[in-house]
Amino acid sequence: MPAIRAVGLTKHYGSTVGVSGLTFDVEQGEVFGYLGPNGAGKTTTIRLLLDLIRPTSGSVELFGLDARRDAVALHRRVGYTPGDLALYDRLTGREVLRFFAALRGLTDIEYAETVARRLELDLDTRISSLSKGNRQKVGLVQALLSRPDLLVLDEPTSGLDPLVQQEVYALIDEATEEGRTVFLSSHVLSEVQRIAHRVAVIRSGDLVLVEGVAKLRARAFTRVEARFADEPPADAFAGLPGVRELSRFDTTIRFAVEGTPDLLVKAMATYTTVGLDVEEADLEDIFLDLYRGGTADAA
Figure 1 (cartoon, helix red, strand yellow):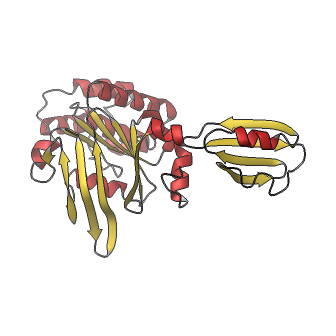
Figure 2 (cartoon, helix red, strand yellow):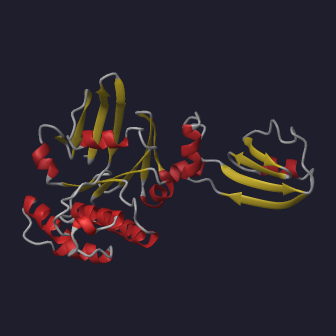
Figure 3 (tube, helix red, strand yellow):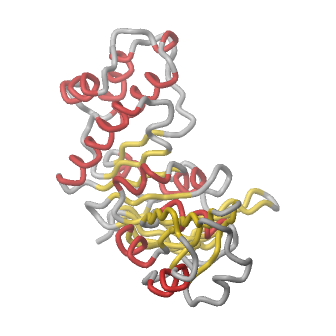
């Protein structure tokens, strides 16, 4: 039974389409990265999953239960950090956590205090006096405090310094090791690549790709940057199967290579090569290719 199942999920805001026909599953115990730029439909999707807004059409199930009909029971099993986090400014971090703990029927916040220490968060400072990054930490701690079955994190590391980000990744890893599920919405590609098992890419409200990170990288192109003693002719590498020239500046040419670079290397042997850099493609290449009008197959 998947942790999340969305079928034909659609949301219209008048004549504006928020998301259209989203169909995907998120398996229990995985980190599911949800990628897209601002305005692509990531937050709308999350609000539909949590029954914070109602779909125009389609359905959502969490752990086999209807997200709308069983919302009260399901919310007890979900921890959520919104991208537009709002907290009670007059309370301290500790008071905020005790409030959320009481709502969930918890008798103590011992685990939350442990997480706060790991994130270097002072719980005795009023929310109004906290920086954006420390407010974000409070949001993360409240999402984690009950060790929920499903963590829904919308841009969770926004405003956090790199060391704290690494601790957040460790907490996410620990959650999945315990069999819990993480739905991670982000536009930080390196972050998703670091911790996600699978990714979905949303573009203008449409789901354009759902794939395992390892599988995506295995079939993605390799980037090759070659520096020549003299600039090769404009058509020197035209027509090579699986080879695409990305840019050319003076005597430096950048290529995208699908599959083996053997043909490119043989073609380059005609010219004097003075430098060569080869870099395995990452999620950023695939994401940018999709947003430039490419397809998942092209990636």
